[in-house]
Length: 292
Image 1 (cartoon, helix red, strand yellow):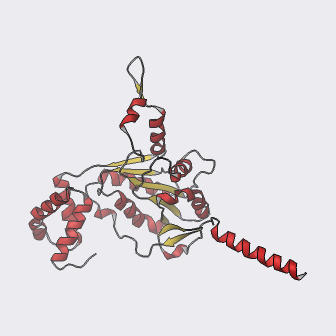
Image 2 (tube, helix red, strand yellow):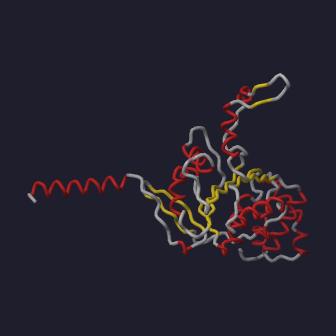
Image 3 (cartoon, rainbow, N blue to C red):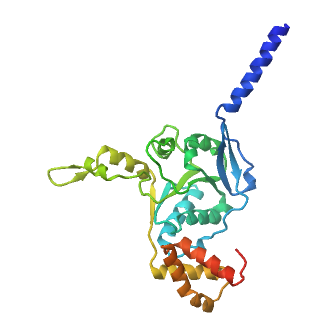
């Protein structure tokens, strides 16, 4: 080979290396034995599943006052892990009421039976088809988990999620379910002007317009809807007591903390499970208890 041709080949190889560095690459498989939970991360053209080294230890027994919601999600997850039919799930409602905690607790409950979780940010949902392909041949069952999911108009992840849920030729495999949490029931912002698109029939029936139908269509593709509601004062106090017991405090101390926990919630403007947990951590810490 002549010197000029050899130089040309070397330059071509360098060019290909530079192109490979900027072109999107399929996700890299992790060490599946490293954890029961993984985070999907894309850095430039490279994508990878990173093992979560410290998985939240929350258990189903730790969650109080959400028994109906717990029963429905546990049943669905048990069906999935057992190889039976199950639904993608959308958990919506008041903030801090246990939506994401319930999903994590299900992971801990069913991990010994082969359940694994992959957390994906909404910005990376466009890569869902590649992610599904990556785990398709694995023996484990995977929950693709999207926390606090909502979309603005025109975001690319919206259509990718819609297609993988129901409607695309390349559907999710039998070992993948999608669990998402959101404060928005329909995952998209809703505006007053959209009410003008509703139509009325002669007999008084109301039909949503195309804009509203489009927004409803994504959430409808989740087969299981689970709603969470604000807690009453007594429910909030029951959750506070549960967490204080979790930190090793006895009933006498828990009773003495009642008034202070109510003031804590009043200052925060919320009687949520999250606020109850935060109070319990603070109160137990002041009494010298170690974090659990």
